[in-house]
Each structure stands twice: as C-alpha cells, then as structure tokens.
Image 1 (cartoon, rainbow, N blue to C red):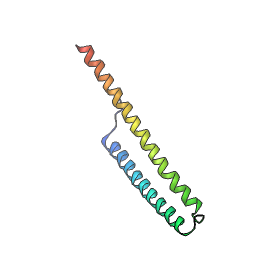
Image 2: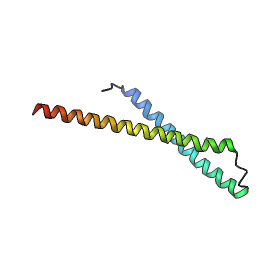
Image 3: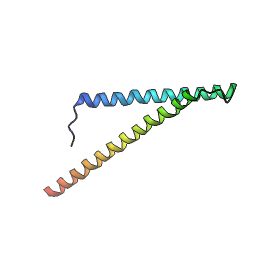
Image 4: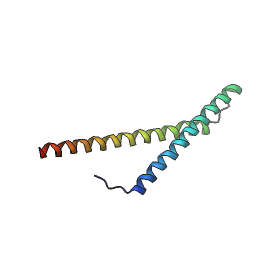
Length: 90
C-alpha cells in the first residue's frame, strides 16, 4: 500500500478542512446574496458572484465525495487483503 508520511497526511487533512470551511462560507454568503437580491430586485444579483457562489462549493463537495470514495476503496482493499492472509495461515 502507499507509504504516506504523517506530515503529508496532516497537510492534506488541513487543506481539505480549510477548503470545506471556505465552501460553507461561500454557501452562506450566496444564500444571503440571493435573499437580499430577491428582497430588493430579483434581477439585480450579479451574475459573476452568483456563478462563483454556485460553482466553488459544488467543486469542493465533489472533491470531498471523491476522497471519501477513495478512502472506502482503500479500506475495503485492506480488509480483503487481511482476510486473504488470515485464511492462508489457517
């Protein structure tokens, strides 16, 4: 399996955490922007900000989902390898 140092693992987890906080912040700001735009004038929402507030969190959550699936794959692979080796020793 892969040999990952603890510093790289910590840096990866920290990076994902920071990106998730930024994504949740942009989701909250996007909701506030749409609520304020609908209260004043529904057509007044800036298109570039609205696109960013839609795209950035979706991309981060997609990366999170891919990382979770990758971790599940490695977990199942490790479990299968463990079961094969324990079955061979009996």
